[in-house]
Length: 175
Image 1 (cartoon, one colour):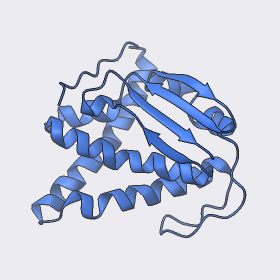
Image 2 (tube, one colour):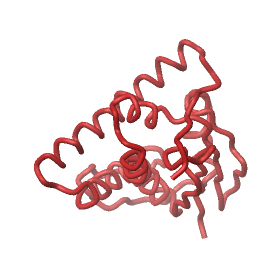
Image 3 (tube, helix red, strand yellow):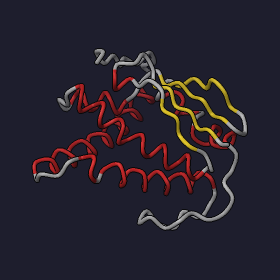
């Protein structure tokens, strides 16, 4: 595994405060999973499913479909386009926080590159190993997979900062 490199280029005070909020969320995830491990539970046995449910719920709110509840109720309604997803989730402040670059945005594909990840930053500060950070990233990305589902798409994950990549490459693809 390559060494994880994750240094922000932007140091705007407001963006830094928002990043701290993401780091706090990442700390929750890590500490919950760490406590579960101490109780003998393997992360992969429960965490990906829980985060996928959260992503579906969040994606439904983004897309305007009926989110039901985070308990796993099915989504209803017609998903919006991936262009709408870009406008709602991959622009403005979020784009600055994660130092995103939208590589392609069509009705059928949204391809985004992230140059910084506050979640990885938090996990490093908490002392997670590089291997754990890779696993945590895979779990966290299940949320994006749930958002993709809410938009009638699937998630394709390329390289990630958490596994030593220069960037995170995320694609939402509708067939």
